[in-house]
Image (cartoon, rainbow, N blue to C red; front, side):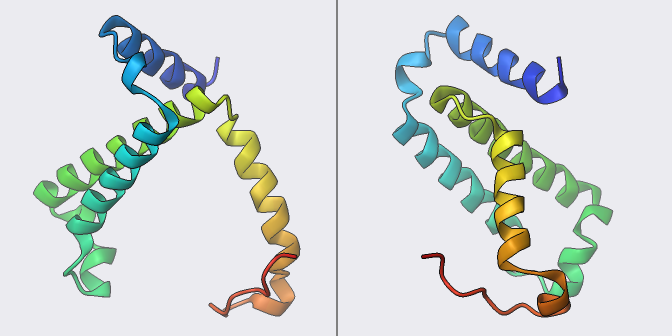
Length: 118
C-alpha cells in the first residue's frame, strides 16, 4: 500500500468513525478544500516574493504553512476518494496533456499560456 493509499484509508476511517460520511458530499468537500486553499494563501498573501521563498525558515510561519498544506491535502484526498478518482493517475494524465500543450522547446523560461483546448 502506498503512502497516498494509506492516507486515503485513514481519512475514510476517520470520517466513518465520526459518522461524517453524510457530510462529505463532493460539493461540501470541494467547498472545504477551497476554504483551506484560501487559508494557505492568507499565510503568504502579504509577503514579498523573497519572503515567500524563505517562509519555511521561520518555524512559526512554517508550522502554519505545513498545517494549511495538510488541510488542503486531506480535503483533496478525501474528495478524490468520494469521487473515486485516482489522484496519481489523474495527475499523470494531466501532466501528459500539459507536456503536449507546453513543449519544453517552445515554453522554456516563459510564463505565457498555451492556446485554449478545443
